[in-house]
Length: 255
Ligand SMILES: NC(=O)c1ccc[n+]([C@@H]2O[C@H](COP(=O)([O-])OP(=O)(O)OC[C@H]3O[C@@H](n4cnc5c(N)ncnc54)[C@H](O)[C@@H]3O)[C@@H](O)[C@H]2O)c1
Image (cartoon, rainbow, N blue to C red; front, side, top):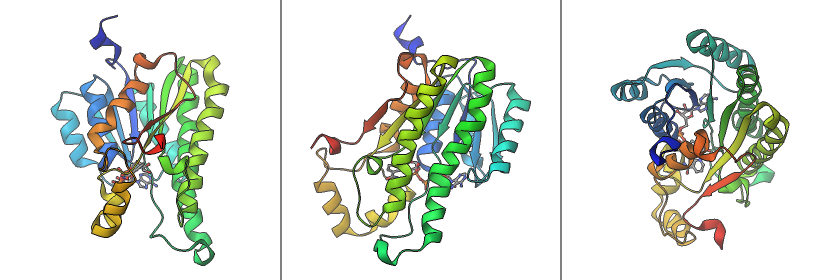
């Protein structure tokens, strides 16, 4: 196979959650540039992403959906199948962090449920429902977006860490279960990125400098530095990989 063809997604349909902004927006655009038709799923209207995806000549539909709501995920799946007949690639990117770094003994159960609800339950619901379609159609690739905080602990962020560690093991469990159906399931785990999610951390010069000092490449990552790993796992270039956690972290976990 030609090197350039390894990463092509021509004729494939890709669903990206959380694609109205941040990392999900760049992932959607990258998959479109690789030739995929897109389904943009987000709580918010993904109008700007749709505009950019269509500008590269890719077909695209936008669906507003809360991934933590089973009925909404059912609707998302039905609409996707109605429009395209199949989903080849699912990127579970939508995720939220906890509201501030509150001591766990003072944190609320509502906050725990909220973070676990989107990051873990939401990823599970999308895997379950879209995975079913992939099994029916003969295969697919699921890429779950986790984080280094799902591998190493971060104090005062138990729900975020536990939810993403859950995503890592959900991925491995599904990889084993669905290999026989040619559905591959992998993780991309970034460290801190320059997006809205990390705005609070970057707002404080002291906090930011402290965090950057712990990263061998001495800076937060850019979304453009993560999308290549997602495309790799989505495409045939990674056809012998399933159940893997691909870390993209400026060297953070090498220490
Ligand atoms: N930014 C970082 O530092 C960082 C680091 C490691 C991993 N990540 C992970 O990357 C992913 C993307 O993060 P980001 O930085 O682009 O965040 P972001 O806040 O910029 O974007 C997240 C998107 O997800 C959508 N979303 C939130 N809840 C949703 C729900 N219930 N249903 C559907 N859509 C929902 C939001 O509307 C938004 O468009 C997340 O899973 C996050 O945990 C981010």
